[in-house]
Image: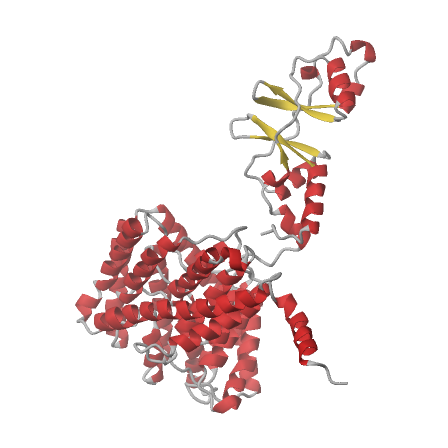
Length: 581
């Protein structure tokens, strides 16, 4: 018997439901389309201004002038962030990851112009960062803005989903790679997991963004990194994928560590001094690279490095030097508070690593030709190791590899998967982003990440230190049925008085012994900034079902009891955990 169209639609809806938020699904997907279109327009304008109006013109200047441009760009970046962004940081793609893990994600729209101007100034004047950082940030901000404006229509639960969809749309537009955009947005928040609930909105927003972006009249629909060639694959290539994965794993690990140190330096030094010093270093690198490579290949995001490699007039030593120079340029730009992303710099390092292997094999007469599949494998492995996004890295290979038809693309993907997987194992827990979490928490674990205030009781009957034990027993233990009561002198917390401690005192001495003589101050107090996990850990360590909460000055705030945490869990179970982060 044939099923009716209505029953078929119902069955499809049930299958898609696990991928969607609770309710309002169709509205969310409609909003994702509009989000993708708006992100594509913003990202398109950003790319046009950065590459066409700025970087292309800077690249046409004499080398002496080009070498000065990074300092100019970094100075403009500082000015934009300080005066337009009210002192905000140059962080872009990291802002998406940090916001994703917030209980209620927030990215103020008012900071978007400042960070876009900062990104255009940094990259357009020669800073060695990628355009995808501002693109991801733009998509994230617009995603949350759409949710805020349509809150009553979409619901609060749509915030994190549209945040992710916006990030996917930003990557899809800047790379003209919609599948890469989806996978990067889903993988970036975690090192060993994906944000699967946002899959469908991200697919819709990414597709809409890609189609809109390539239709913009001022955009040349060519992949940002050009096309990296991949030939056929043999057994040697699969073994080479393992070797490149190991190399990229160690290289990505070191690269990520240096990037994190550069970010730490950027936070602790005066911005204008960093701009001048960092700009001078970038200028010296530009001069040196112009002498060595006949072009200042250390300037900009590195797109022209692929063209330089394609010319074929390269040697192993030159590629090695460029690998080091490009890494230094990116690290200096980050440490100088430059604004931009790290996906493209990681991709360039990977391509160079692959060409190093290719050139080495060619000199040893072990390789077929310098343009074998090694650069593709290096690209996938280095992105996977540095950003901990192996699926996005392999998807990027599939969407940017110039193979001959489907067979050519497939030939690159299989060894790329191997290289990315191996690099993940070798890289360990390293990442260029400090805001990534290892994996999604389970329902119970998520409860423990909630703030202490979720289970805090402030209306608490306390006992003064000069009260008699008999008063404590009759008023608190029997009258209020409290086994443990906080001892507070005015506002100062002194400790806990328990029934067990009083029971150790002879009954005849209850009217002569004060609470101050039997209280316990061994158990530490909690701070309001703690999470429930912190409080539970301390209660378990001291075998107690209660912990007192004080402010930074030792004044009593309230208590957290194990029973209240259990009640909180029951409430979350009944509401489906909708208030969890």
